[in-house]
Length: 246
Image 1 (cartoon, rainbow, N blue to C red):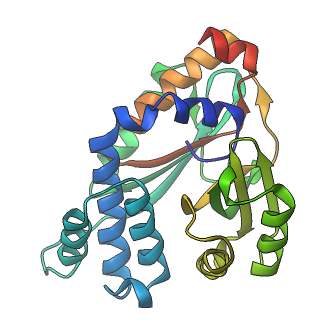
Image 2 (image 1 turned 180 degrees about the vertical axis):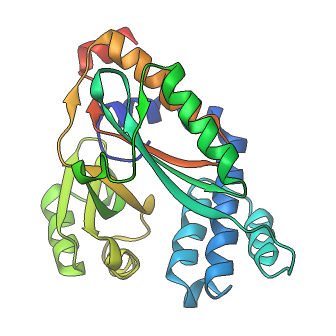
């Protein structure tokens, strides 16, 4: 789930990504193939592909898998994927954005709609919730990259717009069109980042109670398990006392 929040940090520490390791590899490889097919197969000449490869390496995707995904983009009969965004509301009106990459629009639309309905939400139209989010670039550094002031100065000099720091690390935000440029400038100043990606950043977040958090996580887990779903973002946060009960 994209976005910086205490809940995201807790989920990361619990190793949620490890449970979905094979699916994550597959989704990252799909992004590499699409990025390479849409642009140049050389990451140095294709910013989107460069970011996709970097994300794959950060997730420990083997080099041969990355190379195979790039080669696949150059094959004449490679699958044609369509990128489509779904927007809707989860339990208690929490706004959710689902980004997908699919070779069958009917299948994906039907599945996403059924997931929302089954878990107490409802799918809306395009634009129904995205106005509550900002499309930005997010670059993540570990706490070891430096103190908050050092990272803030480096980020501003690199062209970033904002930085959020806590004991777990630093989240640097920039314009979506400047992500590759800012990421490269930061690597010179701070070294390689943990992640660089485009996200939907909630303008505000709503704290949820235990029942709502439980229902939301079931919906988000179901969405993320679908092979066509690339990312899921929601505008909620889980207070520490509620997180402890989960």
